[in-house]
Length: 610
Image (cartoon, rainbow, N blue to C red):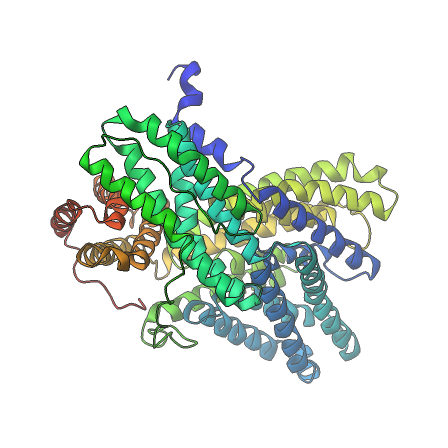
């Protein structure tokens, strides 16, 4: 295309949007950088072995939400304490018996990865398996029982230091879930006001993203706020009602923007935009609007627009009315294991694949007596995911981040570290390099993992022990280890029991259509939960369709097949707003979508736990 129009290309716009400063991104990146620098200071002061890995754990223990970060830090601290307590009595037995030590590594690795695939430990299991295997691997390099005991205590510090610093920083600096909930609803209302006031492609894109974030993020933030006990029951009911009203407001704005007759658009915007901005200003400060003047709608509206405006008035009034009683809790919430934990062989196969790749990396660097590439084993635990497409996508991000981080680390070693003469200078260097990586980590999920690997490679190069590192050989070996682990994971996950993401698409599409049909058959007042569920399923299905591009060639579906399902998904997306507002024509479109999906031979949906 001509160079003058390249900036207008949708892919170029999407790439730029990935690096934009979204709300909360800068604060999260700065908090991550601060915790990393504090962990670096403590690890250098007490000369903790492997300071790079100690600092790297910070990026796994911190989340944008305060409550999730605190839970992660507490769980990891409890886990490493229990693990060290169990290993201390076995140290004398395992240190001089390589067979039993390796067997313990294999069994513990398999068990923890299995729990990560088949239980509620999924957010923690990969990191737990990594720490366990690495601690046991360290025992093989220690000559005596006393040194092994000290090594285990250092391993406890290896996790306790980043967990403790993260816990303190989260309590002081991280935003409360209540504040994030108010900010989330405020951003959604502002995006709706912007779309009404300036209906262009950029505002439409921001609106759709804000609507998606509001639908997917409201329920988790409400749950976290209740867990943290910072949201009283009365306020929780008010925010729950306000979130439901916000969904109706956004759905109505969506229909107004898509209406083919724009003659009344400016008059509607003039009546509604000031109200939405005033509500957003109140929500952004952590408060809640309790008195909203109804807008004065223009006269002479067509019947379809009059219905939308009536819904808008009802939703605005819902903000200030007494909230209805919360829905009855679900009788069965599930146990610790997923329903098919012991019947679906995929969980066992996943645990075997991760363990095989990791132990192959361990055997290679042990047989070659090349301990510098021990990062090969660590990489396998971080990269392994449920499907081949997800694994390959993560491998691509990992290689990209590794090369960028390694280049930044090498440049730091050669040009910057020789002039560093104090711990303050080292912290400044680490802080600047890590802020670049943390900015990527705090961004969109499509690139955040590249930031994790960028930080890992940079830390491996610059933090080689107590004090600045100048050995280019160590940096080279660690980067080679990362690339070796990446290659091992690719070979194992694409050759041994490869799991295709395409197997999930048609059953998920069938389930989504069933939810949409159900929402079209019930009353408007009962559609809130189903609408949120349908939108969440739509987002997940779109992600799986995008992942098909990363499938290995034998598993990759035809382009026409993917585009046909993507077109059907777009039709379902356009139905969310009409269904939520009770559009009389929506059920007919739902039936047409179901007939089109029947041509795909999707079959009945699998069980809920599959």
